[in-house]
Figure (cartoon, rainbow, N blue to C red):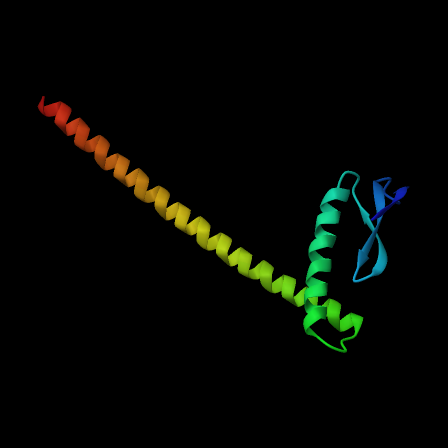
Length: 116
């Protein structure tokens, strides 16, 4: 990735322009200053997925290859979100069970103290 000097936009918000390579082709992408490392990580992921699909598909146009990559990444994102929601629900259920268990223990201990 090559770095292009920051450029002021009409809103006077500074951006950094970064050269990225996807499937052997260079693109210039703007990002906020300090976000270059994150952009590099994103580009690596997308390029990896493009190459994965390109290895399986034959005679596919670049546009179709990019579209298929978008669909694959969107599918992975949706599945990850579903797992995240399910995980939060499981965590919530576990927390409720733990609180109920502790409440029962405190009630039991309080009853034992009351009898002593």
